[in-house]
Length: 360
Image 1 (cartoon, rainbow, N blue to C red):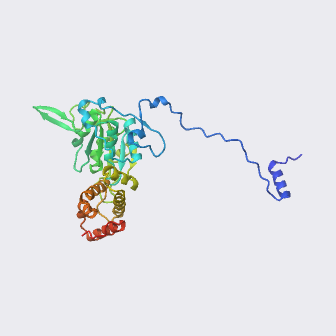
Image 2 (cartoon, rainbow, N blue to C red):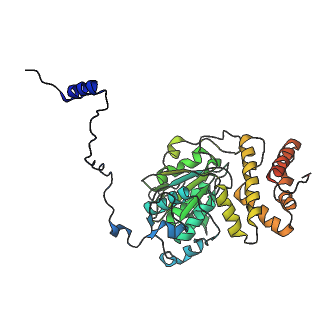
Image 3 (cartoon, rainbow, N blue to C red):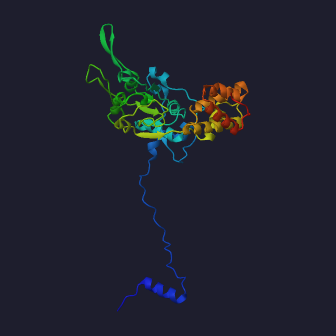
């Protein structure tokens, strides 16, 4: 006895009735896929502050993140002056802000790169201001040695002493350190960071006479962020005096963030926050013009970058002079020398709809 399958029965009925018979849909509700994460306990948020309260607006992802906000009294008295002041007019790149907050909360190193004046340096300072966290800044420079950062032996009253550099001071005392433009320093100099950036959290004090004290264990509250215009693989744009770094050093930062200029509406917000007397229409024109200059800079038709600092200087001078053209000349255009570049900038100026004048 042969067995007739369900599919064969449906095929026979369809051939006799001219089609139209289909397999009924399975109306049984599907179970949701298992979550990859355990439910978060509310107790883990106790004593922490939500992201929106720290930054001033929610994170665009819609997620709620919680972090520790300190009291100034939590720090030694001599470190309290290192806590920055809050700039209420600052507007954050949310992903960069989140990386920095996570770095501080979870004791992880961070690295940010992007064009000049995009907020790579000021954002860590403003994060520390909102967390009441002591903050220090050190700049990378060509021709430096590890001793310029980690310190060196020093003769005092006939005795040999160790004198900390800015890096070893921050490591020893437990403050947040922004190492700005580190890739202007050589790869050999930056090798001193390797054990500090990874889980070992130690800094080799080159030249220290004591082999034990010469391996400085980082304070529990020490945090570090590296910020540069490039990624450490050299300067493909030939715009920065950056050296190629050792890949093993670059790999040790936990959080990596590319930072670009803020969207136009956010940069307009910065100008209006900082200069309440500025009209919205002028703020929008300044930001639109800045966007065109930055595009030309990236394409190589304009030599000088145009940063968020530049738009603020332009706006402030425009309010003072009551003349955007005079303000732009004073804050940027007078530094442009090539006739072809000056003409390109004038064309952009007229395109935005500023008062049509020659900027000669």
